[in-house]
Image: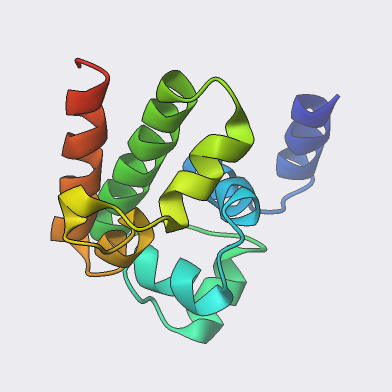
Length: 128
């Protein structure tokens, strides 16, 4: 039913939110990310641009698409590593000795290199 509603919306001349951005917003709810954390994770587009993206988007910048790819990869790894979703969601904010006592979210908020670092760590943990 959801796909049909999106198709109808697109057919009515309204812009559709890219799937990776829509998924990011769903992940943000699960991770209980603040607006500021969300903006930072997707490359600091500015508050007005961010809220526009929550409604409709034309083309996302390549940097934002790459960041979203890493976030979705992190989400996927957590789903594989943790059999209970809430444990994976808690792991994001838990202090981690691999990250010198910082949480994965703290590292991810450092920028692209932080996103890559967390993704590589999780990929290594699951043997990918």
